Image (cartoon, rainbow, N blue to C red; front, side, top):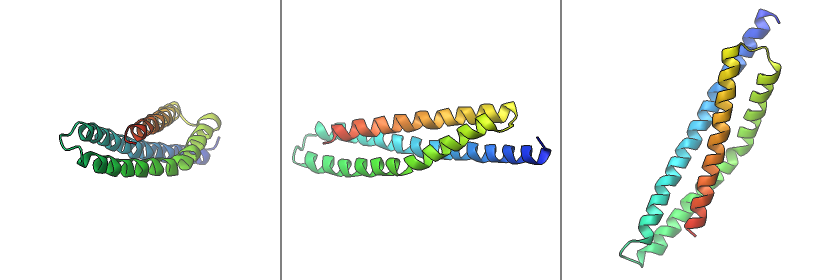
Length: 128
């Protein structure tokens, strides 16, 4: 492969790696917010003022639905990113380090997506 094509592949891989990192961090932040909301839901259920509990749980439910919608809305972009990264890994003449990092970042992104969705789904069922 020519040096110019190899340079384009490396630039493309680095951009994909950067996007994987960006999406992973966005998902991680959403998951952390869900975990904090979960703590608030638990506190609300055991709070001494039972009249306030339904209002708190309703507000938490609204926020959880918003996070769920946000996560679902980026799912197609994550799928496209995963497909592009997989194609780059399989069909491009990347050096070992770029290919290895891209594989790791892609696995991390997919794992974080699954983890975030499970956490949101779990909280959504607990605040109903």
